[in-house]
Image 1: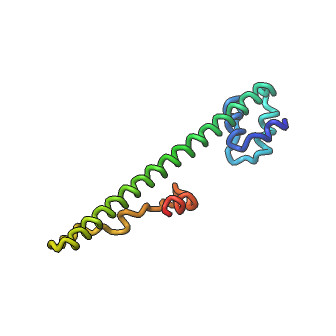
Image 2: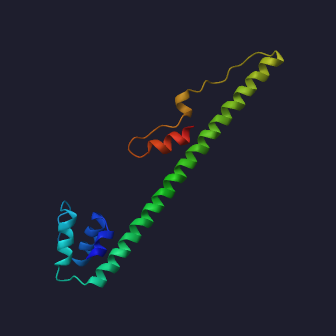
Image 3: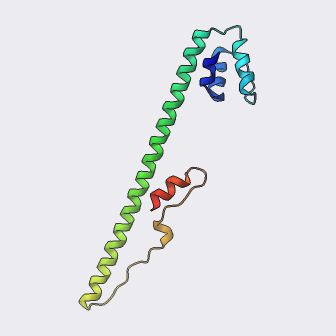
Length: 134
């Protein structure tokens, strides 16, 4: 029974699904544990194996999600750096034109909002976003 404490509520709900126990998703963890233990299909070793697999699957999915999020942040940082380089080059070209005495031709102006990354409240974390914008 103590091994069931390793899993969170979602893990226990998945165990119930696999061993065929009907459970309300809004049930408390203690109630779910009782349903598992009192099930006719309950075999301790099988439930331990299922729980270990469910936990490892969840942790693997969390790792994959973290990696994907980090890759997205890296892509956005590279895009931001590219935009900054473009701005630097365009500014350098303008200053060269000024020094040579030729006609000054100002290129298209780029709005600051176009080159700064946007913060998505639903999908981004503030700590990661602020560190990527510094």
